[in-house]
Length: 520
Image: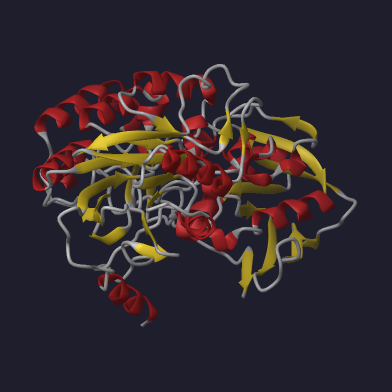
């Protein structure tokens, strides 16, 4: 009922008689594309051509091109923007890095893009190569780049674009904890987004710009904070949290646009499944008169641009031999959606953690910990291809083994459940242990009843742990593992380990078995 009330409220957009001086523009927006250049299935993983022909697929760059061009035709005045995380998610990134993203974004005619955390996955130099190819400004206001030679002269904090005779200011923002989420290197200092945005808004306003849009790869909760803590922002186009805002879908996370402190906020899920389309009107003072719209579902009713489809097929050629190899079979769909794997024990998390532990159990390793944010897709029933496994585990992480005390294990688990409410990727999927999470308690005191191998966790005892090299080296807040004893970060690729484990099971039947208990 509350959601329906919210959506009904969203339909009652603030409006006023349109004066001669009023100015309207359509904001077309994407976020968290993650290299889904080919169509996806309902699990956000790869969709084969047979299913695509039968109308079972969504998205893909060829549909996005059609949808964007159609939207441009419908509207005389438009702005096409992206809220970050174009990089990482399929073999396209592993093979081409950011080259295909730059090519396709240039083809679409993007006006600007915010930098997401995954744009840093292969360091500043790789991001710089992308920015140099992009025919549009790439924005990030809340980072000091003065000591990073690869990016300091390439990335802007904000920019001004003229559309239909009006100047529009655009400000970019990235996650403050990018150093935990990705690999930006030691030379970049990330800061609180709100003050950084306010500084750019003030500078733009002083320059006479009275229409200002924030491209925010900070997540929906942080976008709400930005709206409350800044003045002069007219619209926030969000990303990072894969939030689906809609006025027509009962499963939406909120209305489109949501409005906080008078600021409209939009986000269009992820993976190219939707194209956001918001019509926003300003009066001659730059105040928002109205903001209405709805994300466009890119399903089979949206035709695929043939030229783009052919180009993607050409680029996919070198990848096909790798990804089409059948490596296992699923008896039932295996749930790996972020809404589960970042909040509760999930089937994909159990399989991955069990695979990790199985690979190294003869090395005295007792516990496996996999960050839920490293699990990027579900798998449907039937044959499992290498490409599907790589879509689930796209980061080329390797197995890391190490020894830490029971006290450190407890600290790691507390870190893992400290941001459940925000959907943070640090949530721990585990094997070899069980524990209870009490979400009614404050972060830092939520974990109890930790059992390892059927025995209570001992504070002073040293335990053998397997994780991935990202977590072992402090990613997702697991800095307590950085000083671990006997650390070895160069094991086999996690995707290969998982594929081989699933193959050995015969048809994989997904399971949860109570290793994580949630109390609220």
